[in-house]
Amino acid sequence: MDLIDSHAHLDFSQFDPDREEVLSRARAAGVSTILAIGSGPGPEKLDAALPFAESHDWVYATVGIHPHEARLATDAHFDQLDRLAQHPKVIAWGEVGLDYFYDHSPREAQQAVFRRQLDQARAAKIPIIIHCRDAWPDCLAILEGAWRSSALGGIFHCFTGTLDEARRGLDMGFLVSFAGNCTYPKAQPLRDVAAALPLESLLVETDAPFLAPQPYRGKRNEPAWVAEVAKTLASVRKSTPAEIAAATAENFRRFFRLSANPGRGSQA
Image (cartoon, rainbow, N blue to C red; front, side, top):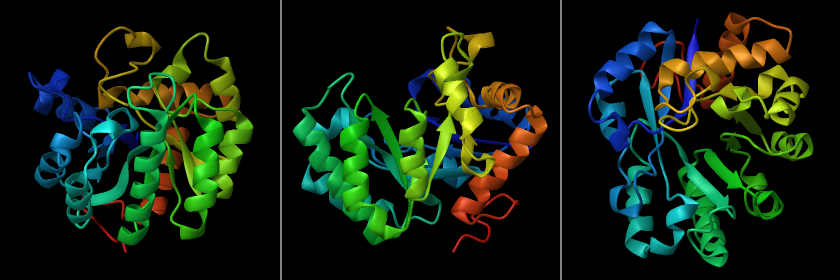
């Protein structure tokens, strides 16, 4: 299968003991590309994903401040993000957004940091990776008011919203990415959304090391297991895992204007 893991945290310490073996297993499972998310442990390490993108031609990177750490963001951090976004392997800004479930940062700070990063991503002319948990009304209102006109779109990472919320994202040029949680027994509403959306709008991801799919639940997640997400989407869409893998890989490459070959390819 030709699989793309559209969201993995390769820099996290859970992978320190065997990171290269994890990447080797991903390749053996058919993973041709990984998007390494660069929010890192917080604003003190905004370049967290770049070493992996620089050392592996099939890995790309993002940069951004996660809503959890919005309270820690300073002007110096925003300036650093502007510089990092110019790196040739950085293809998106994120993950950014709102998280009202944990509220690790005040909601006002989350919204302010989110809006500022939207302005930065617009200036850098790169799409965004959205984290949204229990905050869809505010998140969509901000995107529709401050991002839609950029025409750069983005990805709803680890989607947990409704079909209507997903469709509002599609109207703004977003893709919708499903993670290992869609494989859980109680996640039928998510599977229903995945079944109803156009195939050309879907992506698969692991969010590794989190959200290991059902066969591995409770273990550290890793990019090789994105195949389980493709298998679940295939089951609800009356398709095959190989067809879902191929379609979501093509969606990713089309969105980021990448060639099928490793490296930055034909991205404009």
